Image (tube, rainbow, N blue to C red; front, side, top):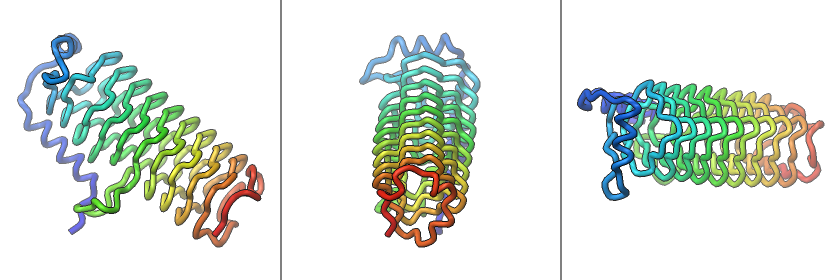
Amino acid sequence: MKIHFYGLGLLAALFCLSASAAEFNRASVQHKLANAEKGHPAQLRRKDLTGLDLSGLDFRNADLWGSDLRNANLSNSDLSGLNLDLTVMSKINLSGANLSNVSIFGVHMGGANLSNANLTGSRFIANLDRSNLSHANLSNANWGVDMKNQPMGLMRVSLNNANLSGANLSDANLNRALMRHANLSGSVLKNTVLFGVDLSGADLTDADLSGADLSESKLEDADFTGANLAGTRFGGIKDKSVLKGLISSKNLEAAIFE
């Protein structure tokens, strides 16, 4: 039986509900962080931190696994290198935060604010539908499906209706992601792996897709007006008419249709 990864978000919520009901505020979290060390992290695991203003804090020596961060403000905070699997982060504010090399697996982040966030080298398998990732840095991020490790069915990142305008996704892996009606206008997708991605209705106007691999992707009504298609691979696309704005794209003659 296949289990969709969204169910893991519910599992995370149950973890949080089972945690001891301790009261936290910004000051108590700051106190824990100030006394934390790499080998003795601040214990915030499975804690209820909903709605707290935790902006600008350094969480690198914290254990936030399974915590409830719904509606919390962690803008401009440093969470680099953390394992945030099974946390609850719907409508979280992570704008300008450092999330480089983090792991976020089985998490619901619908409506999250990740604008201008540093997501380089991160590993996400999460629901980010309707999230704001405008001008975020996802270079070298691995948000693609690991086809060798699917014990519960196909688990993949979901970015439907997400705002990725102006984002840097160069050299990132987003194979088989769901990106229906995503806004990727003006984004940088140089050498990005977009194999098998559902980009139906996506806005790719003025995006730099040079060297990107769009083979086997769903591109119905995707808009390529002004996009740079130098070396872009469109493997499996037999009918170019489904691609909107193709005639107005840049370097179309250098695109690869197989």
